[in-house]
Length: 103
Image (cartoon, rainbow, N blue to C red):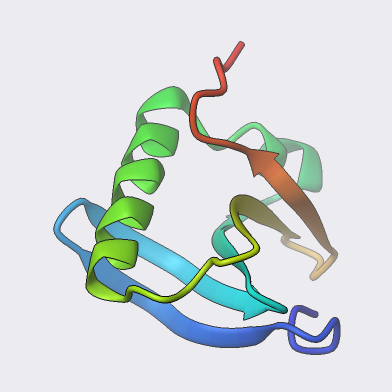
């Protein structure tokens, strides 16, 4: 879905000192760190990202940027790609940002 929308996949299952990034993609200078969540339903997948994991993703994104300078000139965002057991998918673009306070 990302590639069809014009995104270039820069990395898959990328390990950093802070943890793994499922996907790193870029389009027109906008960098997206994409977390993939697979659960029995889309609703369960949507609630599968907790505060600790979100904090880890933020740190992993910082590590990736430190090792790969020159990306994200148009901005950086964190997306969620939800996958249900029946194969249904939903992408939540800009799911959270640095400094957001999770409820």
